[in-house]
Figure 1 (cartoon, rainbow, N blue to C red):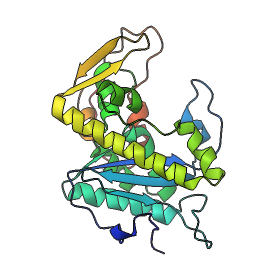
Figure 2 (cartoon, rainbow, N blue to C red):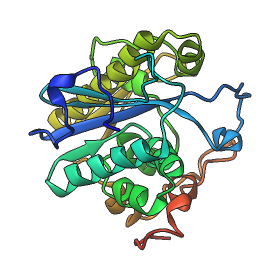
Figure 3 (tube, rainbow, N blue to C red):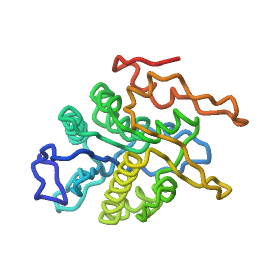
Length: 258
């Protein structure tokens, strides 16, 4: 069965001619995440849709299609692996595959659904994940929308991420498809701006402008070769860097600085 797409002109799924590919996904699993709760306590997840956007403006979706032609509830194991294979082939062809928080979430979730953590680890290690790099430098997390706003990118999110599974379950598929494509485009715009300026900008919780130099975007493999971030200044219990990569340890060999 061929992976359905809203963009049949791109079928079958060859690796596009692009410098960058941004990837994002949305869940089909319905659950309430409590404040401060670990998302992965609710795993394994069902995936509703995966999307990519290239720096050339091309967009592709992967989702299941029912007999009635409408999107199905969740992505199959076969199609999840197809996405991973597509992303890996793109990386091997020299395209920079990017995702915001992709190392610890998107690629891991794809590997779980595909039943192929080894392939997922290959993709994750060569992924450009600016949020992981920001955490490496500052020791805390930062949201995509906040960075996009700080960098002067006008595009806004269409909904809160937690609402996407609910809208998918209600049959509002086009809304979710537009949302995930928009997040891919936003990720690509942020990466392009970071490559241009070499600086991450955002506003703190107090509304104060802040920035962090990021002169070169690194892959996760390169980030892990650096010493862990200094979090000694934090009053609250800091996140450990292991939360990003520990899922890959049994499935890939890579260097981690201590």
